[in-house]
Length: 109
Image (tube, rainbow, N blue to C red):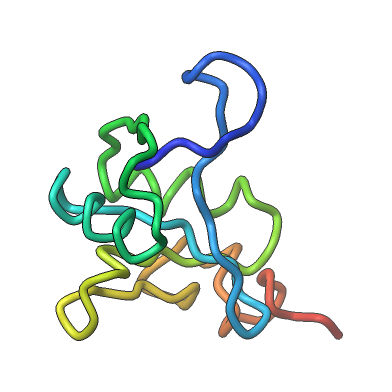
């Protein structure tokens, strides 16, 4: 997980996210090479990228609900078809924040 540019020590910096179609995605990478491809695609290859290793289940079960908005996880997003997207739906994220469950984060009624 690359750490965002927020204030404070690395342990307190936020995760890197992107919003698409009303859904926030936490950007995750399977290894340093995948993160490097992302940095190159953004034109930020010369920047120092601090990161932290996080279990995928922890991202889905803890980080996604903590965002407070409909949120999923995008893995290796600079790798085209080889990347993966975990949308905020039942069976992927906790039901309480799944957009396809009544009363979840996507229930705006």
